[in-house]
Length: 262
Image (cartoon, rainbow, N blue to C red):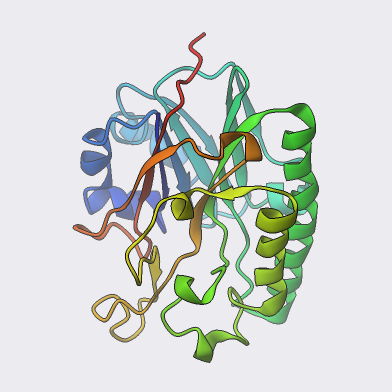
């Protein structure tokens, strides 16, 4: 099973940069998109592009035009698609979409960023608190889950190039990092990327300011996080940087797991 997670920072802009041409070559079972910045009616006139052949396609748009939004492209038709996490503040911004295949859930998550202003950091904290309980439910139900997306938090020093200078910035705050500690160390969830030894300075997002991309001054804020039942299932990981579709790079992970087909 291959799953790709990609924040496109505008799915129409990413399409113009060749994202879908690249995606079709990857033979992924599920592609999880974040930050579509579009509403479905804006994509209908180009269905052949935004509803790619060979995939069952689902979108969860933000109510606000040109903002947030997530999508799922599934090679196999899901048994069920869950739109939203059941939390109105996040659901109005189109931040969660889940496909269920038998006992497997694959979700696209776009956690709020708190970098714009203090108010948005509080929105982020509220979403984190709610989503923690949401993740506990996966465990309680005994589901296998892969929660993909832009979590907007760099976990440890090795996940951010300039960790010393960012300790007071949203995305690397002690409270945010401690929350990921709790998910991984106390609740038993698994950071799929770290299941395999990685090269130093492996990131998934680079600011458009200055020379961040050229100098690889990046952050690893895109994850595939697994329920404890999937620990040990990762067989390969890849961050694609040969082309630049957005300020994020696609994260591809292969699993020793077969999707149940309806």
